[in-house]
Length: 285
Image (cartoon, rainbow, N blue to C red; front, side, top):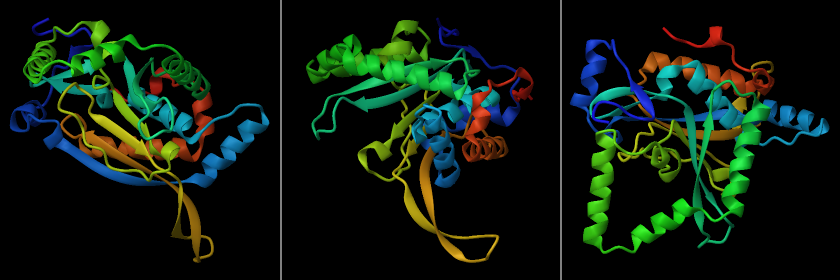
């Protein structure tokens, strides 16, 4: 409260330009860097087929979430955010996702919040996410009901409620229960599986409310021309596109290049995710 937060700890010892960035560029929406990446599907398809023969059913999204969990633990700066012009390091890794309860155009939706330590294997990540999805789809979500109730308030009262929420968040007095289950905007990363509804990946904006500074969308696979380095011929290659939005005040270009290279290596060989991350693999410098 007032200088402390229930979900994180203050980051100290920052260099001058980093410390000043939240003052020069106070808005997360104005600080976003965006990139679209192409991931070859062949290694993922081969791994998924191999595990299916072993009786284990993985999807592209299962592997992608496990990669993000691994990256957010291995590269701790990814799990920082800026609030009240200060840098904060989250206590846990938290994923937010909006899921539809059916594929009808007017289907109800609910938010999903899953907590990770960062040491989980691919199998453990899948179990955690599947359990939370099952619970969200098959139980009445009290948080959703409260949000729906707020939406029916007169506009003047609704604006007051939102202002109070922003004020409380700015000063660190929102309760941990709200941060954990009441708001999809307070998370390490937000993911959207657009493949599940037949859409290509997009570059999603970041939200100024809350503290989530990383958004990834995964789109439907497509085929793109690519030069085969072995033959020099142009071949049709199955590609999965992912759109990433990132708050660049917490992660500079060099740091993110290491994140991106590691993520691509993990997606090219998901078997690496079958073993938990070791402490000596965490980049603490």
